[in-house]
Length: 147
Image 1: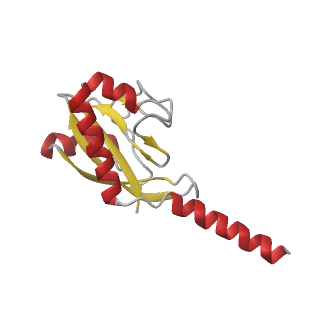
Image 2: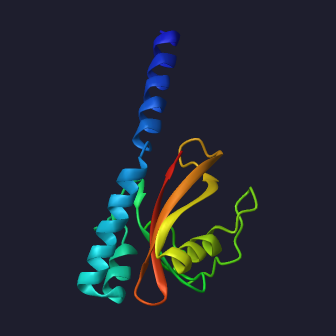
Image 3: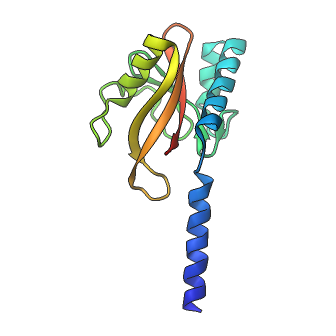
């Protein structure tokens, strides 16, 4: 019985890990849908929707956040960090990720940025990549996946 329980736990953990296995294409498509919504309803209404837990752009592990070009989070459905300035925040590898997101958008309008982030299942630091795109004149939205 002990081996059966261990097998069940391993399958459960494996299933939970698989639930977080997004692809770059899924992430980019979700962000592009968010951009289209922002273009349709305006930045303020779009960012409000992005910040809603269980909202239009909160699909479990696949969610969009928003921040302005000063690094202030303007919408996040998972954590109560709206209003916090994360411009100088560094990941465990020393990447100033929110500054990097802003730099990508200012340089190219959209693109990918790599960093490390705590995995929600394993709680260990893991490589992650986010696709970001500018909305309005002073904000961006983005979403990421674990590599």
